[in-house]
Image (cartoon, rainbow, N blue to C red):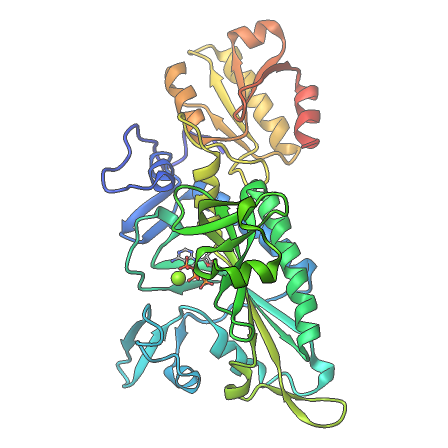
Length: 418
Ligand code: ATP
Ligand code: MG
């Protein structure tokens, strides 16, 4: 993509109404646009990152047997009345409206009830189980506070997977597989070393769930970390009984603020029993399906990456999710030969399947470099009169700032071996 064609502009100053670092940087760089408190539009660069994050998650969910669907965001009250969750005292973040034709409608804040009901039409025998269904779908939540930028919004896409198993044992096996997939996801997003599987409250069957918490002062949660085992305990369940059951010793735990980037929940038969999702076991008896739910907020994960990996100059994207692999910065100052060389490099890399953002704008070098630092593309390649005379491009890693002078073939090798 040619940067001269990009409709978004960078800005020097952070918007005054944003307190979180992720929103300040993403807005300054033109990745997102704030529509109102707790609601952001994803612009071309931001959408590329979000799509890359979703692709990483999708790959891992498919690898453990997930089948992707897309449910509606409009939900009818009846199914929620069966579980008791239509009640505003039970679920305090509902957005609801009225239909012109009469009656109420809800805007999805989660999908256990409608999906459980849907599956009653497809699951009847033990041969139909286990099954794993997921989606990337818009959730609406009337959150009281929306001060964490894209990490807590009132409208957001969630990856929500639901597992349907015959027995507790079968459920547990998948639960652990999904936990492992989550570890791989957060590693691939570049935040694995700071993300801890965290013992937390909230499961319907066992009363406990597992959260994936990333250490950051921008977080709203507090956890106690055991670095040696790379696990943690959420403050809400931090007591002697929990620590004993996990074999954790208080003296080795470190308190930290953290961001809940994902979580996995045992649901037991909380939804399958009231909604009638049962199967016939081999003895011919009708048994409720054992369920679990598994969420990740791609935008919250994106905000977390910004919070953790940025520096004083701007964002620093890991190669796995960066909007482009290369930021080609042309410093031609009107020199046609330099422009031609930049164009040639752009075509060669693009044809090799490498995503390139080409800064072909007529601006001073200083402005181009500060924009480049702000945007955070992993590798900056400068084409100038100097590089032309040297016969090698100046390639600088955004992370760490290491510079190398590479020929086009060396550059291609470097980019295809990441
Ligand atoms: P929190 O305690 O932070 O409100 P939650 O327990 O409500 O999170 P879930 O309902 O389990 O979270 O949602 C699954 C995932 O969706 C979370 O782990 C998080 O990554 C993401 N998520 C939840 N609420 C939001 C939100 N308001 N904005 C963006 N992402 C969210
Ligand atoms: Mg919540």
